[in-house]
Length: 125
Image 1 (cartoon, rainbow, N blue to C red):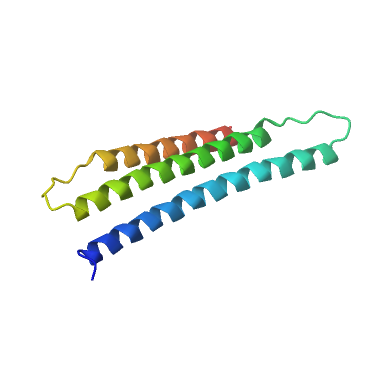
Image 2: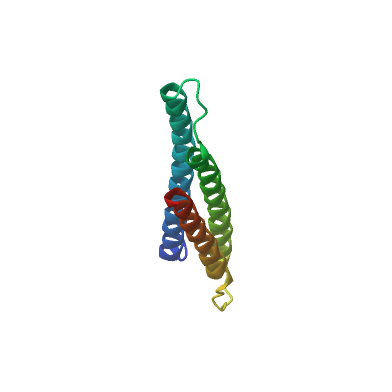
C-alpha cells in the first residue's frame, strides 16, 4: 500500500480540478476569439462597401487572448503547487502551511475579474 495514499489522492484530485478550470478558461478564450471572427465576417457581408465600426467586435479577439493566457498561467501555477504539495506530503518533516501560493492564485483571479469588468464596460459604452 502507498504511504499516505489518501493525502496524495486528494492532492491529485485538487490538481485535476485546477486543470479543468484552466482548460475551461482556454476553451472559452478560444471561443471568444472565434466568435470575433464570425462577427467580423457578419459585418462585412451586411455592409458591403461601407466600413463598419468594428471596435466592439475587435474586443473579442483581445479578450480571447487574455483568457487563454490566464488559463496557461493557471496551469503553470497549479502544476507548481501540485509538485510542491506532493513533496511536502511525502516528506517526513513537519512543515508550516504557506499562504503564498494561495495569494498568487487569488491575485490571478482578481486580475481576471478586473479584466472582465473592463471588457464589459467597453461593450456597454
